[in-house]
Image (tube, rainbow, N blue to C red; front, side, top):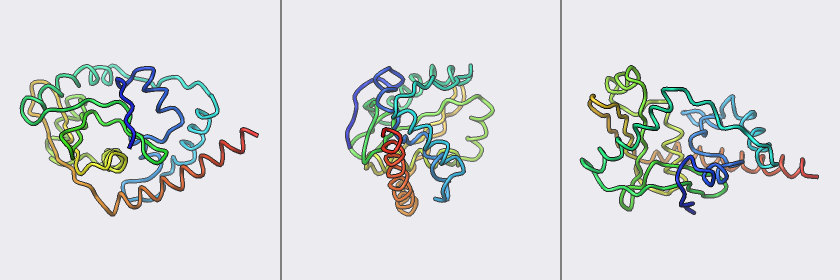
Length: 196
């Protein structure tokens, strides 16, 4: 694994991710059951365009998303105070794909923080498990980094946080790795064809 040590959401971070399959979008490649996603082809073409030099505007960020980004530093402080020291990280790369966990924890762990709107946070608290929408991202981070677990933290000021430790799912990671290998090969082929 290679680590690009730059702040997340910085110009260097966006540049490093351009044209690279990233764990936050692995759901566009594979479903939570390991089957190919219906969004696969569109994401493949988007990344090919990025590799060929297309300038892509940063995605839409709602007021709730921006508020979540602001709360992230408070969530990190909470985690460090009550659980463990963290090391912030930029973009991690391995085998042609990457991930941006919110932090490394010790030698074996990662931290992934979500600061959703209050109704979503309450939903997460009631379910008391990793929200299904994040399976690919979390297992993808473990694949890229080679780490053993991720502490998933959902945080909303004034409410109890939700902290779920997610271990490696060897079966899912094997399926994800196979799908990523195929996806990256196809991406390279498309870029090569269009560069001629």
